[in-house]
Image (spheres, rainbow, N blue to C red):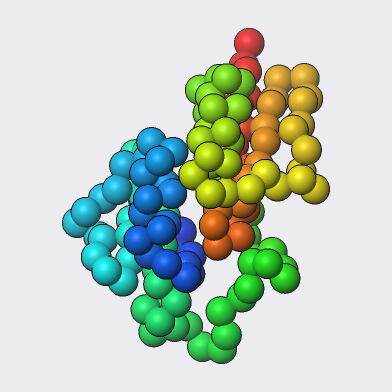
Length: 131
């Protein structure tokens, strides 16, 4: 097994910390400081939200602007349909916005909704009911 760290550029590290904390996600302080915040989603899966100046140290070229194009879709699982709705509602209350082109999806065993964080990154929350 390997750990996964998704790295995303953010305009305001403090705001990102507050946003994901409001959704109930743990902050891994070992990898967080004024330049970055590490949001732990579960065993082995985290997002490194890096301030733009710090993010630039790791790339060539420009930082993609999530308001004018989509660079990645981030997917998170939920334990139930209710948790899907709860996380999206928490995101909206904390300053995110619902991702309207992606209305709630209801398929046979799947339910999902999506939101944009304050920087415009898309997060899809989904529940799959097996059995």
